Image 1 (cartoon, rainbow, N blue to C red):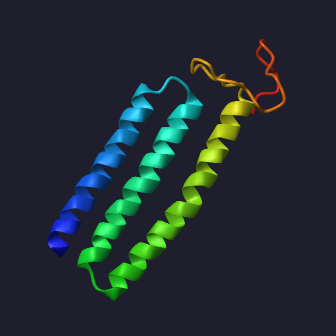
Image 2 (cartoon, one colour):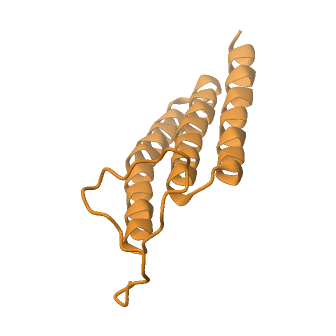
Length: 115
């Protein structure tokens, strides 16, 4: 039974991470690509780590829990930093029906103060 759970979680984690890669390829702009990448990484790695916990001893389980905790903390922060950098570089949303709810509208011309 443990081997079946392990195999199912490894396959599911691999599928989720693959869908994240396909999302990065298929999505039209930076912001939706970040979303696809971050969800794929967090969910895929978490599933693979839980699969490893099913088959491992306590020292490995603790390391995997630490790995999942670091990824759960680092991925949203890095995604927000990339999104903010794209916003400061005046990267526009090209998704059909996208609405800018930031409260400020980006100018059409190229700014001289790019970072």
